Length: 423
Figure (tube, rainbow, N blue to C red):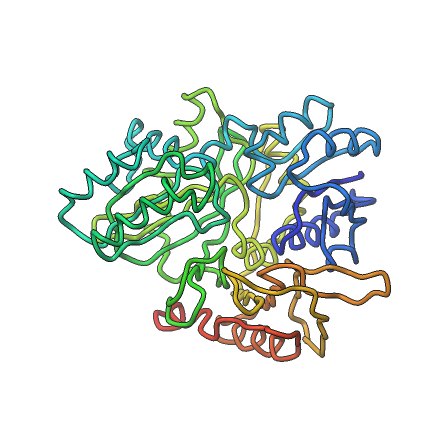
């Protein structure tokens, strides 16, 4: 089979790597791909992941047998709808279902309507209304969220009422996140351990993957601005079998049923961002695709042909297959460009030493004509290692990090520290 993966980050590199292990895959294409993906896939850098029409025409011409739009933008723009209309089967939600990530207002309203536990919230269409609401808001911190996609950075945790007012102005008046901030959600600040649970679903059956712990802030100790993610470990030690059972009954199945009742059945990977609060698990956010970098930590633990799972989700027969996972731990450390998530320079050559058996997934890289790999984004590489114990996986990941060099390289040095404290 000829496969197409749409995207250019570490998540897409991890997906390509897993798909390449399937005996049914003859060739993988990546649009636009990156410097590392070029080793296992034919990259098509001349087309952007958001150019849906061009992607469809190209895929039809190449007689693609199966496509995986892996990033949020193409999914929310209707990549699955357009490719399926061309007769190309896909793994992923259609445009209607992708709203669960594409619109915070949609997802929060869905949870309120169907009784799925989440933070208390209000929705605002104008800055004036939001500011008046904050005038009477008594408890801080408070969370301010842009409605639409914002590269994982559209959520501001304001420590004071004035900070919240400033966030509202930045989002709605200064258009910090563009059209994504035309509406916003103000919600209560929840406390407790955070857990990421990605799941496979065919719109009827939902099968959670190994749980994980993301590290969103840019610097050690969860300091600095929010990023797309600076690392992850799996499984998450806070997520017990008892909590998993509770989430299945109160969150996972109800969400799948709610989407079906709303006429937008969800097929693909549905990401549940959870907070384990003193009053029970609650949903912080949904994503309509694999998390990044959670995907990079989770897929190396999978013991099943990923293409089999993707096809079962698309064909509504997920209940027929068994999905097994290694009894092991994984750690992913993100290597970023100095200045990320704000201003940073690119184009620096990358050197790779002996990284052992760690997997190095490329994110923001580009391969030059002479074969040199250079930086091309904020999050540059992912060093991923597995082990029987979490400590061993962390040590191997950081050993690999030390073998990689490029100007401005930085990473958090405490990925997995919180998880180790509860081992």
